[in-house]
Length: 180
Image (cartoon, rainbow, N blue to C red; front, side, top):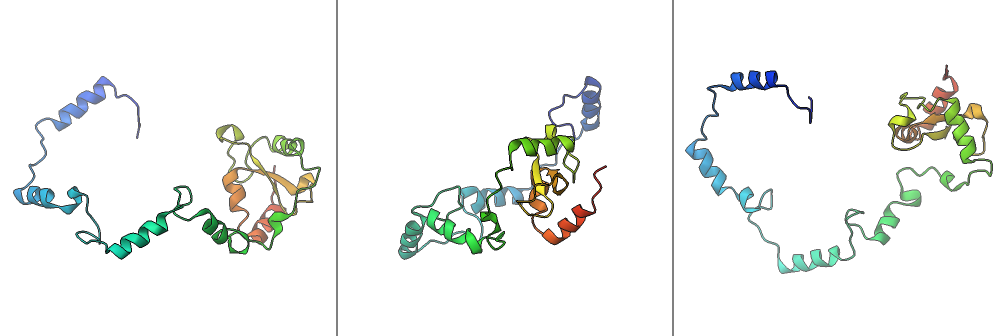
């Protein structure tokens, strides 16, 4: 599909010729009746069509909506933190995320790893210039303190997220990985 591309005059003429003499069949009377009577056109659809909430339910819904914001899909800030942090978070790994990076973990070091890898993601081979952000520098053994260049690899953000799910598998994969 050539979205946004302009068609040549020859192509336009071919389309006109193909459509010549062809018209959409008229809608049946039954179909038009159904369309005009449908509750979907009147703003009501789904399982709740034609039903009404009780006053008690309306009060509950109003009370529950207070303090909600769009960005957290209806949870209040306090509830959001309770549900999605610490041991309750889906990516919880026993508190490892709290370890600080060593002092030597600098932008200069990360840039040298990206340069060594020719600014290309080492998994999907997408160049950094095609991404909106810089490549991530990933620790192969997941140890933040191991800054040996052989333990660091350049990955795009999507692959960096992906390799953090099954750590044993990816450690084994990258330990046998040949960069050349």
